Image (cartoon, rainbow, N blue to C red; front, top):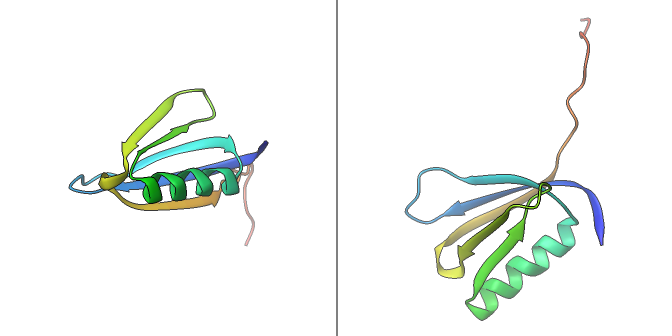
Length: 79
């Protein structure tokens, strides 16, 4: 099931930069995939909203942060 755009941040052990992408999968679906990968010790496989695949070995995952992305607002603020 597809939902709102969700931002995914994955911290990879021994790597200074985070892997950051947006997906149209639900936060629940991404969370379930992460939990299954960590539990089973398999490769975490996720796709972004453009169809690109991201593969991270479970033993290399340092953290995963999920959050809704807010579309940037256009215009000027007053105040």
